[in-house]
Structure formats: C-alpha cells, structure tokens
Length: 273
Image 1 (cartoon, one colour):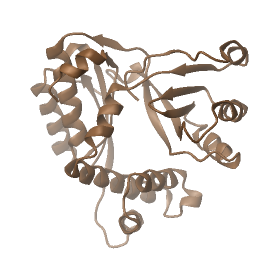
Image 2: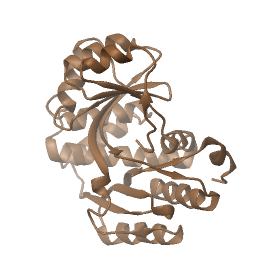
Image 3: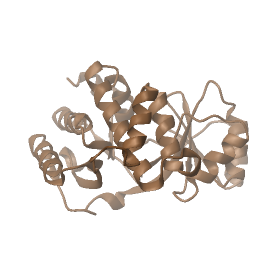
C-alpha cells in the first residue's frame, strides 16, 4: 500500500468511532498503476517468477503443508488469484521442500530516498546479494535518488497485516462487525476493495476468523503502511519517482516496493510512464 490518503467514511462514522475503530478510505496511485502494467505478457511472467520464489521460501521455512503453514497458504492463494498454473505452484513447493533443487533465496530489505525525498522500502528475495544490491543502487542513482543504509526510512512505515475483499461481493457492515470482533485495527475502502488491517501477530487469527464467518478474502498478506505522505507537484520529480518504482518492480529479485508519496491525478495523467 502506497500513498494512502485518509478520510472518514461518510456513513456510520459516529457509531463506529465509539467502538474504537476508525473507518478510512483512500487510494494508492502506485498499486493502481502496477495492476495496469501487470497485464502485459512480460510483466506477467516476472510476476509469476515472484510468486514462485515466495512459494519456495515459504515452503522451505514452514514446510510444504499449507494447513500448517499460514505463509505458504496465503502464497498459494495469491499465486492462484494471479493465474499461476497449479503445476508451477506444485513445483515451487517441492523445490522449497528440497526436491531436486539447489535454489537458495535469501530475504533482503533495501531502503532509500527517491526524487523529492520520497521514502522507499524494497523487499527482495535473492540468490546473489551483491548482484541485487548493485542493481537497486544503480536504479536509485539513475532516477535521482539515493540508496541508503538499512533502517534509514523503514521507521516511516508501519508493518501491518492486510486482508482484501471484493467490495461488490461483501456487505461492508457485516464485514466490519466481524472484523472488530476479531480485534482488527482499520478497514479501508480502496479501488473497489475492502481492506482489513491487523497487527502483524493477529493476521492469521483475523483471516481465519473472517473465513469461518463466511467472508472469502482475495489476499491476506503483510504490508507496510506509510505514517505520512509527501505531496509531489513537480512533473520531473514525479516522473523520476514513477520510473524508479517501475524499474524496481520489474526486477526479478524484487518482491514488493513501498513508498510514501502522493501525486495528484491531473499530474499523473501528464506523466510518460
């Protein structure tokens, strides 16, 4: 989730605030753009590779049975939702469990500043740290940013659990009631979806609780939510930011990219990306 603009949902506000949950609505410029870009064949292939790596690592760390490995279960659900063939999913899990594979991926975090002082956090899985770090650094340099030290901007983001539902197939009030009873923190309406936010330790409990209550999620995953955002109004700065994020997302080793920017819709329309 990137560049979240928060405002109170217009209905049921007073009642829900009394109950200790703030209902928020917002949008993510970068998430929307990623969805559009991912429709191309080349990016779809790159996305499949990212899902396969997550499956391999999840199986390696927690075993190949999704019933007892929540990370693997959610990875399988995301991969299926994206269209990754079942055979690919099976092979990735087998590799993670050590079936005829020497692939050894290490999880890495990179942090830095894009143009305009926008904070960026990158989550990667790599079998060659030097290669990945060198590539990431070159992207920052090319687009007027700076790769920093670990921890330089990570504190600007809160790590949360995020469970996503299709807004058209889920009743908001019913979902809200169930979520707060399971100690969820926030509910956001964004781009035709309802997103239930939880603490990191509570993600599995809330996900499984909502499933038991009859709510089928699209995804359940960890994300990083910016504590505040930087408004970008300069076209050149905005273009450098978007090109940097795009290049990072296209890298085979990069799993997720987060940034704390907001760009006006009118300016976004002008950008050549």
